[in-house]
Image (cartoon, rainbow, N blue to C red; front, side, top):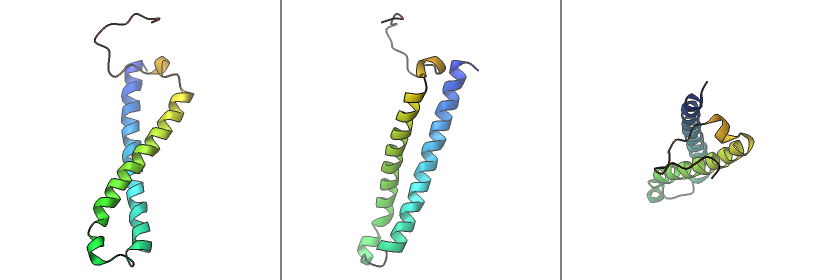
Length: 96
């Protein structure tokens, strides 16, 4: 496998991981809401629960993705296995 193929697989895997974390956090927050807050909150506040839970799950998935990606980058030599996704317009010389 070459660097470009590794990069494509990494981007696809990272995207699938991010979507999975978003879905899991959404369902966990919905379960938490249904068991704890649905009985306590008034009817007007319950209408705002779905958008709030959706946005909270996106934020949670962003932070989990950032932490996991940080640990992965520390363990793997990124320049050795992956091709840069965005290249500089100005060709930098190697060693700079």
